[in-house]
Image (cartoon, rainbow, N blue to C red):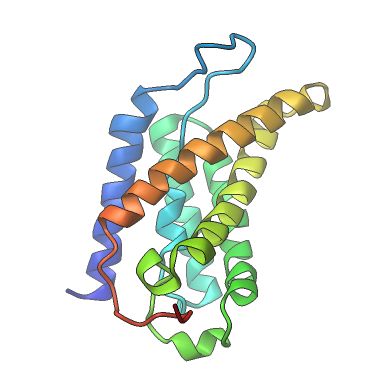
Length: 183
């Protein structure tokens, strides 16, 4: 299957999961009424799983369009697009920090669990999700009076988003057999 077709199908699957399932079940911590309701987000995983060799310009365009698509489904007025742009800008720097070799050596490999192993992959998507959720909730709530509220929403959304992203990544990780790190 073509890498473009595979990524397009990945985008469709993630958007459908996000809009048809995750948006329908806003989660709450029923034991503590002071913790706000939140929605886990996994659609950002699409941007994180783009091939490493994808040029930054294309990553930014894809990030913006992905965010814009999510804004259309969630009626958020551009918040997802801005947060996805921050994610797209940060992606290359985080990959350079985590991967042991220069990015040019990875050609068409995608950063998946199968190639990176569990810990580097979780650090990678954890940092990207943290950036995205911080920007998203800071813009959505937009108040210095609610800093603690924003931090709680970021933390809870980050944990549940990572769990859902990990489940998705484990279910759909059939890529190149190359490993970046030795066992």
